[in-house]
Image (cartoon, rainbow, N blue to C red; front, side, top):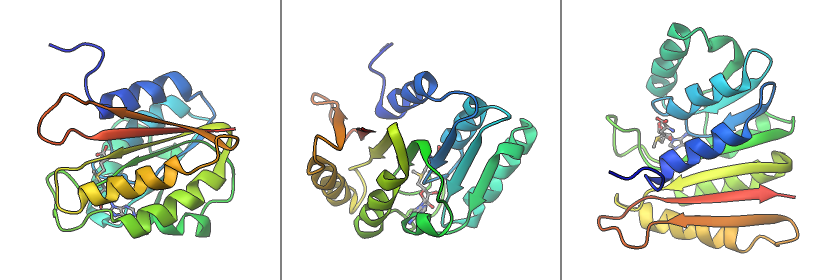
Length: 188
Ligand SMILES: C[S@@+](CC[C@H](N)C(=O)[O-])C[C@H]1O[C@@H](n2cnc3c(N)ncnc32)[C@H](O)[C@@H]1O
């Protein structure tokens, strides 16, 4: 049983746990089933704020219900729109931004993130990060279009000037069956 190198989703979660402080303002660009949104809502506390985007109302509805049960809804602001439109809703600086690409697990697999809107969104998101803010993006390569999206994300992030941001790739290189890949960006 693996203990430390589990999977990119868990590594992203641990980075969030270590980095996000009470009172922080953070953004989940792909709310889905709400795992990251709920985790972030706990970390930012009563004085913080979590913005959450999803294009599927069912994802926002189910996550809202989960947050209500845990008494965490007061700090979460849902936006039912594509994350490429972040700048229509958010102008304040953010401590952390998280993406979990692909389709809603247990939902309609044809509704998924796509490289064009993901890159548009990433460009806007990085501008909103505060100095030393973090952006985490988990890419899945097993579904149709997933590999292409990951390559586009990698190409975009890999071309960022190192004076502007540091970019890491967390990638299991000995696993079969297309393991997800996590990119981490720290903006200066
Ligand atoms: C892999 S799921 C996210 C899982 C989520 N982080 C969790 O903890 O359950 C991807 C989500 O992205 C959403 N999505 C797809 N395209 C989007 C877009 N352009 N803008 C915002 N959300 C999008 C899907 O509806 C889906 O719910």
